[in-house]
Length: 97
Image (cartoon, rainbow, N blue to C red; front, side, top):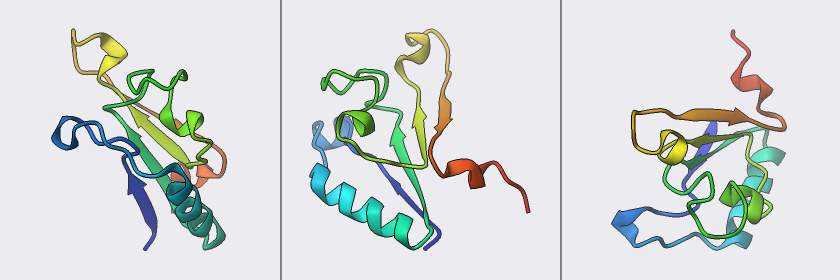
């Protein structure tokens, strides 16, 4: 396994359910210990759409992914726009080779 990609909150298909934050922290810690990248998909719940008082759910839960994807509310639904925020050790995402 080279990358662990997860959605912290499942969208409409799972009625807004979430993974237990402690479980995600443990999995992320093990991935980082094994030098694996961790990507958090917050397209559905990012930019405050999760209801936990911060821009990203990964921040509210003190998760430490290497990158966070976000979108949906970025352009208020007027046109498709999304982004990737590279954090911490995620610089390897930007290296080529």
